[in-house]
Amino acid sequence: MITLALSKGRIFDETLPLLAAAGIEVRDDPEHSRSLILSTNHEDVRVVLVRATDVPTYVQHGGADLGVAGLDVLIEHGGQGLFQPLDLRIAACRMSVAVRADFDYTRAVQQGSRIRVATKYTHIARQHFADKGVHVDLIKLYGSMELAPLTGLADAIVDLVSSGATLRANRLVEVEQICAISSRLVVNQAALKLKRARLRPMLDAFASAVSAAP
Ligand code: ATP
Ligand code: MG
Image: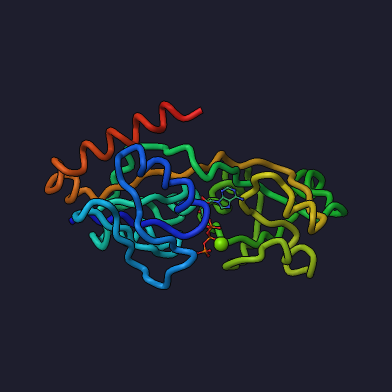
């Protein structure tokens, strides 16, 4: 049995065409089923639905043989025990610093002020500000980061941005781009050896589908 870990939403939706390219069709629609294990047109391939941040953990410990996870999630997880053979180029966005329009970020940085930064991505944020030599107090949040500068909880946030519509809706401005983010295929290292005959053609099909995508 090959078990693939996916998260609901954009990663699931954008992985489907890649699965199709490998001849795999998922039987149930996760939005209309309560089941967390989805069967496919192959008896020996199944999909398990887990939280986006749990995908690396499932694959690392063998709860799944492979999975799809955002680079953001992989950096925060650390990537131990994971083979990362392929950038799938899906769920593309960027990791950015954003502030309230009336907060002078450039000046705060130049003056060497301590900046209060709220984020779910504490590893990425800590590394970014350390590289810049900026002192920050990190405040760990699990969601709705945009709210932090609006309520006075923080001066800045580090969050994912794609169109910028969410930032605009909350009157925040993007002041710095930290890195580009997309989703990666992750594979359990033991599974890659033990189930090589079944996994290798799947990985090759994904790779061809990614190169063929516009
Ligand atoms: P959960 O909903 O389980 O708390 P989450 O909110 O991180 O997790 P999603 O919002 O579905 O889950 O995001 C999953 C992945 O999709 C992220 O890890 C990231 O790589 C990518 N992603 C997140 N936001 C965007 C976005 N605005 N545009 C494109 N990709 C994004
Ligand atoms: Mg979400």
